[in-house]
Length: 134
Image (spheres, rainbow, N blue to C red):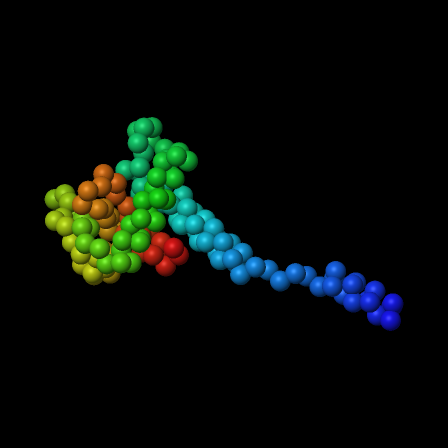
């Protein structure tokens, strides 16, 4: 009986503890955030409206602002909020609903969008990609 108890103790020690349910969610969240940040890094020349100190480079602080903006805008888009504007040759459009932006993006992949009350502009493709990731 003594040997059986020893084996049980050894078995308990060798059996890995189950991971908590929250751990994969946390890992997935940070991985998705990393993907959005990488998407921004891959498109630095397209997010120059975030160059707040006008030094012609996006630093980490500015990238952080861009990331927060993408997260916020993707959430607003997911929830179908109005107040979107897009860039045209003549300037900014009048405020649009998200469905209008989706239709325009299907025709013009290089579309830049903003919010009615924002000084920032983002390529629509970044917001659309973030919607899937965030």
